[in-house]
Image 1 (cartoon, rainbow over the protein chains, first blue to last red):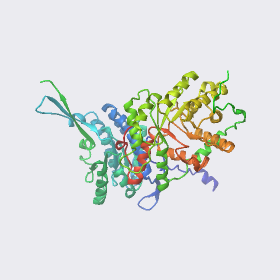
Image 2: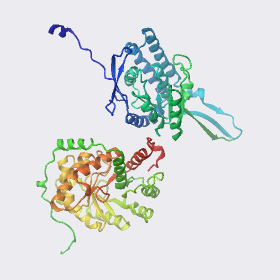
Image 3: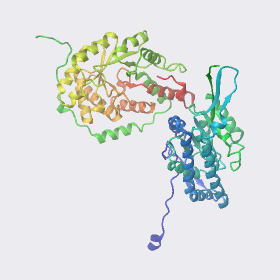
Image 4: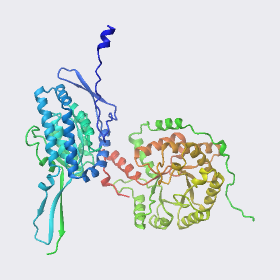
Length: 292
Length: 308
């Protein structure tokens, strides 16, 4: 008996925490929910994030935003490449988590491959989207008239519930590559990859506060993601008419940009698309006087 | 040479009797204050009380009359979108800006506090410091925030520091005197406790933590030690002394913690702008944002509040 125990190693289970301002705190509310697999076996205890966790995230995201927007496009691209590199090195962990959440091994492999490729895709756009979307405009006066993109600011993202990793990355990457900072609510039914992805972000030198990831209940947090006055845009990906209505109504209070990504196929080309970047960019037009 | 100075206390307190401060005990006590839960209507009342206790401050070399006028407007109209708010207790400026503030605040019940005595270093002669004080009072300051000579205090010349405070108090006339200890330069809690007693005995109406020019500025630990000095003096003499933590208090949450500490150390009698102040510039907006959150249910953005 004693010798049998001696040879049996006890596995060290991971504590899944939140990611706020470059740190991994537990929820300030002290609440948790048990995540179960298909057979009802508990896989992990997840933090049930609260509105105050969200509020704290907005504060750090706001603080980080101007610095991140001022960083050169090249630098932001490098950081995205680095995230992809780190993800590549930890692919086995993500495959295991995807399988744990109900994915088949083949589907899990496909998803991690697409996720890494998606990061590389948006990293490549870092120093290109500005040229594509900017314009010199013809005007009939003595002005040089041009339009350029500027980041919208702080973005709250309700990540898709049905895509644990690819959907998450397809929303985060285009937001941050354009100089925004974001607060993301991970998939409620499949949140494991989101927390592990936060560790990837952390080891890829993404400045603290640029991406903040919460886990918790949609029904509880959606309202705050949409209503916070210091958030400049909100992205939602599912939830039907009721969610759409709630988000759009509450977002109207400070005229947030609302982006609906309810019909996107995350695996397809409509999610690998520079328009996902321009979704959270503002066009600034300048009239510069010139001699005739 | 017979020169009578009225109201000038001359008895230097026996500082060897000042009790030593238990730093671990202070830290634990402070941690307790931060665990109190103040919610809903209590929170709203606390936030309003905090607003009414603020000394809205601008002490920059770049201060202009326009900046001071703007600050005075803010002091009177904290946030037009929320009716029924109190105004702040005072505005706090340099002596040269007192006349500007007086004009801007005419007809309003808001005190004008002026820093004086070669603020912030205090490195000047007594006569210069007294002139500085008189100039501010003559221009209309109703409160004077003086700095102590930290160099003399640290060298052990308590008599000099004591006499200096007493002389400035005399120069203040009717204006209330706040004595800044600049706790960030005193080093230990024991010295802070000692300096508090010195200032109180020399005639301070208020004791104040910091100039805001030195880091660390106000901390809860330092403030607790000073509140305890005030309490012991009150037990001894029955005389109330005010407290003003200043610098570094920029969030409503932290300010509420200070109120809890005040309530549990000195009691209700001190919970008024007459006896407690916050020296702050960015605190007001954070409190206003919290109040708006309480009334609208929506988290606020600094974009919708006046910059000052």
